Structure formats: structure tokens, C-alpha cells
Image 1 (cartoon, rainbow, N blue to C red):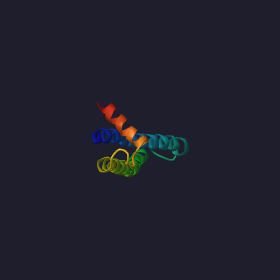
Image 2 (image 1 turned 90 degrees about the horizontal axis):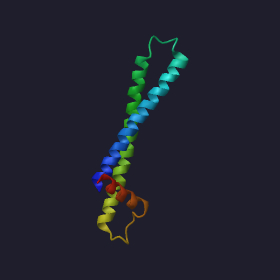
Image 3 (image 1 turned 90 degrees about the vertical axis):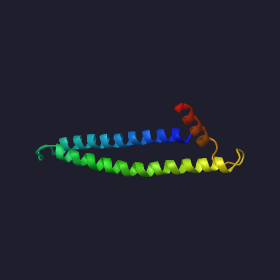
Image 4 (image 1 turned 45 degrees about the vertical axis):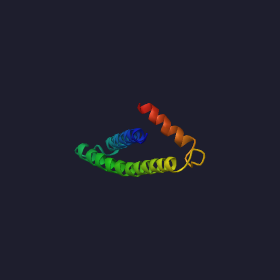
Amino acid sequence: RISAVAIVSEFVLIIGKLFITIASTTAGYYYLDANLASELNGLWCPLLLIILFAYVTAEMFNEVFGMAIWTILQCFVADEEMFSPSERFAEGDLAETVTKTQKAAK
């Protein structure tokens, strides 16, 4: 079950990095083209800087998000191992999500 959640979370984090980078670059391109196109010799250098900064920002954000996913997952596993089903703290949505992810990975 842990590996299924790990695979799905890595996929979500990669999609997030790509989305943030592409969206920032697209917004930067339209802004530069509309407001500064006459003052710049070309858009490639500013766009490469936008790509670099957007990717670094997305990477940092997703590292924090990924750490939160792993922390919650480890607490869930510890809760499952330490307590009987009637005494568990992680119930309801989290347990259902982990079970659905496990079934979807098969």
C-alpha cells in the first residue's frame, strides 16, 4: 500500500512541477510580449530565466508538499501497526484514500 501511494504522490509532484513551470513561462511570455517586446532584443534569455526560477520555485514548493505527504503516510502506517481498528486515529477519508490508491495500483 505504501508503494502505491508513493508512486501516485511522485506522479502528482512531477505534474505539479511541470504545470507551475509551463504556466509561469506562458504568463511571462505574454507579459513580455505585450509590455516589453519593443525594448528587448529577444525573448529567449528572459524566458529561460523565467523557466529556471519557476522550476526552482516549483521544486521547493513540491519538496515541502512531498514531505507532508510522506509524514502523513508514515503516521498512518504507524497508527495501523500500533493500534487495533477500533482505536485508530486515522479513520474515514484517509483510510479510504489509501485503500482506493492500493486498489487502483493493482
